[in-house]
Image (tube, rainbow, N blue to C red; front, side):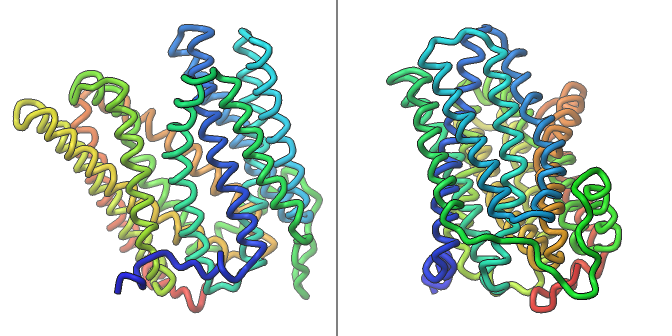
Amino acid sequence: MLRSLLPDLTPFRENRDYRRLWTGFTLSNVGSQMAVVAVGLQVYEVTRSTAAVGLVGLFALVPLVVLGLYGGALADHHDRRLVGLVATLVACATSIVAAAQAWLGNTNVWVLYGVVAVWSGAFAVSSPARTSIYPRILPPEQLPAANALSVFAMNTAMTAGPLLAGLLVDGGGYRLAYTADALLTFAAVTSLWRLHPVPPEVVAGEEGPRRVGLRSVLDGFAFLRTAPNVRMTFVADIAAMLLAQPRVLFPAAGAVILGGGASTVGALYAATAVGGILAMTLSGRLGGVRRQGLAILVSVAGWGVGVSGLGVALLAADGVVSREVALVGALAAMAFAGGADAVSAVFRTTILQSAAPDRMRGRLQGVFIVVVAGGPRLGELAGGGVAERVGEGWTAVGGGLVCVLAVVLLAVRQPGFVRYDARHPTP
């Protein structure tokens, strides 16, 4: 029974190409998370301004949205290995520049903004190429297991990266953190370098690829209008991120409601990642789930329940229970939400990889990046405005419940998605 719950390691064990890619990008993601923390700390040290730190997100988001869409089109028109390799080389070079500026004692914040923008753009191009490679090197039945391993790796990186960054910055300054990031990013370069070419598939009767450009990007959105199951994977995620985004509430939770300051804020972030790790540790049976659309909706509802649980803990901290007990409840709620989000991510990616035709996978992965990057930002904006009026606790409770209600409405409006069968994937 226990063995059946543990992660399915078949893709890692049987496929050398997947094993190399997984290892390379897991190490690279740890480095990236270290760099994210180091950049924020260095910007604040240089400027002593929280607003300046906030601009880091803007310089990361704009290239991510623009180049995510264009990068997806590149992956659909050219050898995906080559697209991913060139973009990852740019990311590695950017990490080297980040390390160099730290070793040289840079105090110009615009250098850091530029590093963030270039690195974010490189990631936006490499990610669709890399993700659309997996369906070409793995059989369809192994995609859920492969995606579970990828989500496990990402959550592990989101936990280990910041912790390592803190240790390195405290021990030797920013230069050590950036240098470690550059070395770890090189592992991703190596994994792509050793992969065989992965050109776009040519299917008889289908129109050949257009020249890469705006028209090609728009073709991806046009395809979504005719692909209700693929479209619903985006809609469900938007519902979760827009209606129930708790991150904007964390600073107030640490500073005022639960106490503990930055330590509490960090713990709430970490709890979400730890929940994802625990869920993927017990992901062995995900590969046997046929109703993957229903699984996504249940998981998104679980995210809403977890966020509502956070709100209950914040409200209870106001004299109902001690702050310590409320903090435990808040951490448990975010761990539950993180686990549900991890399961949702596995099946959303699996449907996108298996139901979409190969000629569209890159562009749809680009849209996926935009949704994943932009949805939380919009959710934070909406949640912050609501919290100003009704308070953080009620914002979380209400947002989570509205998210659950949205899932119910989506299930009623899109019964085909509820019936989606993984053995007969249709877009």
